[in-house]
Length: 199
Image (cartoon, rainbow, N blue to C red; front, top):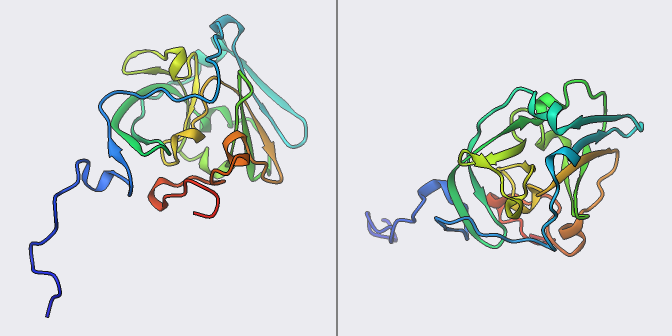
């Protein structure tokens, strides 16, 4: 005998099965930052990948924009509990940027203009899971949202998608980034509600 009557499900959640536990939907695009907004002109922007062996791969803005572009359409989820569905971006897959990078490192520390850092496993940057994006909804990415370019890792909480990205350092050991050293979860899976250390 069922304890709960058939058909008793409560109110359906907006967003359905696309909304992780504890999240609510927003229509706008909230701006949250850990410090002042860096203003980086495209002609002074560069992106680097530094291997654990000390080899540096470097792209200027012009070189970056000449790479094959993708247009991911993804849902994003912030640790402060808002989610935005069907966001549209344009940028370069990390798979393209890593094509000529020889590394056995399992970890990455992402660096931003302004000093922000965040850590991720390298496997979470590859196989179509992450991009360096420069446009949102068909427009250049505004500085308050991370322009001229930011990391986009939509399957993790949005603090992992570092704004104003300038490089990735590959590491043999995991180093926590800015929010991770302040008590946030090292990984940050929204579906497992990994907001804080110990979650």
